[in-house]
Image 1 (spheres, rainbow, N blue to C red):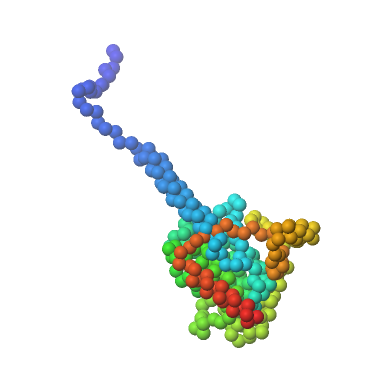
Image 2 (image 1 turned 60 degrees about the vertical axis):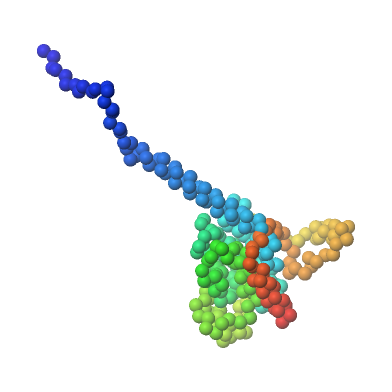
Length: 272
């Protein structure tokens, strides 16, 4: 005799109970929305960075050249030529590392020189420029990369340090400046010499390339300038170099700061 099979009768007129998707079914959709939001946020930050770079040329201090890396938009390469003061004739190459959340509150750029820069505001171990003396806090409404470049140039023309200055990146340099100025100058001369020795050593991945001048190219350049009726002013540079100039930023409220640095630069020239 066959065993009776139990069954449950379901009245088709009654509404069926709603089923709730398992938690695992919700996660992919939520994760996709989060990823999309993060992507859009990062895209807007990257776009803002491009705009900042595009408009930077009008305000970059003289003697400084900057170019983003070809494959890493948040890694910039630069060089500064010093014509006057204690660091005269120095050619210091550097990199600028921008955090992913730049430009937000507290998102400091990181500036590192490729060779030693003997200065109280430069870390002797990492060659990193200390931004805190100029920017105790980083305010995205007031501070930009060009602000850092202005500050960076100013340190090479600094003639005095505050008597109450204590916490610096290189305490030895500050102590030597105050107590042994002759030794301080010797250390600076050494780092300037080193910068010149390594001028044609291009860092891997750098978007700025330095090549030794070729006499044939110089002759062609002189002929070209004569045809244009222009005046050759390139001879004022410490060295001839193959450098791409940055494309540029109009930043409101910074003109006074740039003017002050230019005046300090002129004072350094007149006193040298």
